[in-house]
Length: 116
Length: 113
Image (cartoon, rainbow over all chains, first blue to last red; front, side, top):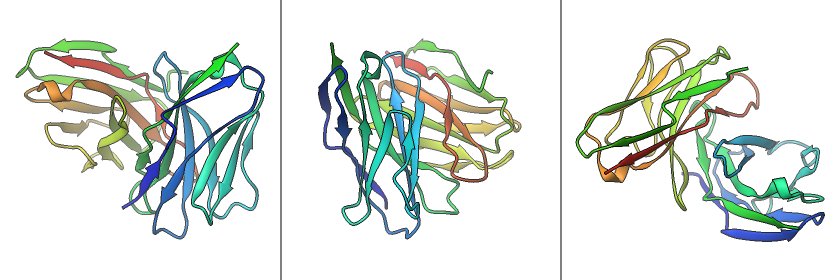
């Protein structure tokens, strides 16, 4: 069974600084991927970024990037130049192995607060 | 640009009452999912549907039933609501191919007294 661990229940960062949100995973599948979602206080789930295990470079989407370290089984989300609007819950999620219709296992999330 | 639409957004039930949560997507996706979100637990999969006419259990299916009415609609039913089912419920859909993310509805906040 897959397992996703987010060890930081809450994080604080000053506006304009960078922040790293941790995500570690455990899977027996040789090919896998990791998603990150953002959930603001309004409640919707917003897709941020995806990384596949065979991708040659770390994924980047605007101010979001993934620090993907397969040997450590970690896929940490880096947010550069934090903005007040980045205050939200952040979830790491892994699809189940191929053939399982891409069901997602979520971590418990990290609540990020950006201070002015 | 509707995406995934869930109704209702909020509902309060009494223990033992029944309720159907509705979900519809207009993106022509085959795969649809129901999750529940509880404080400190992240999202957990209740049921999913790979295509019209097929459904399968997820991690926490007890107390729920689902119906994939057609390609667009996937409903979640609580036959006899219990306080433990107080939660926020999310419906999602996903394209079949590629490394595509699931698209989520805005959620239904359900309280059972």
